[in-house]
Length: 100
Image (cartoon, rainbow, N blue to C red; front, side):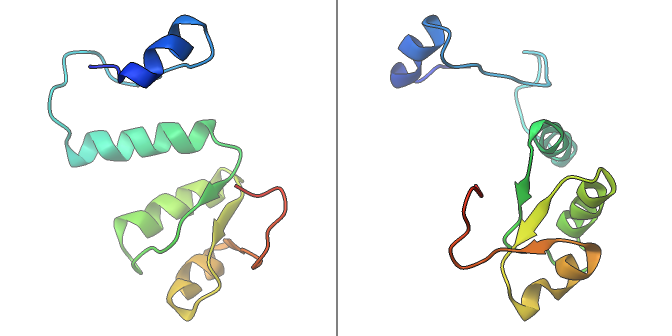
C-alpha cells in the first residue's frame, strides 16, 4: 500500500491509524472482500448512514444486519427509502445536530 504524502506525518506522529482486516497478500478487491470490509467498518462505527439501498438488494441485507446489531442506522426521508425505514432506519432531520 502506498501511503499518501499528506498522511505520512500524522501517521508517524500517532495521530492517524490505518486499519485493514486483510493481510498484504490480497492485491485485487472482490465483492466478498468489499462486503467483509463494510461489515468491519460498520462494527467499528457508532452510527451508520446509508443514502439508498435497493429493495431486496445486498445493501438492504447489510442494513438489516446493522439493525440486528442494534446500531443506529440513518437514511434520507424519501419514499425511495421506505424499505430502510421499515427495517428500522432513522430518518435524518434536515438540520441534524451531533450527527455525522
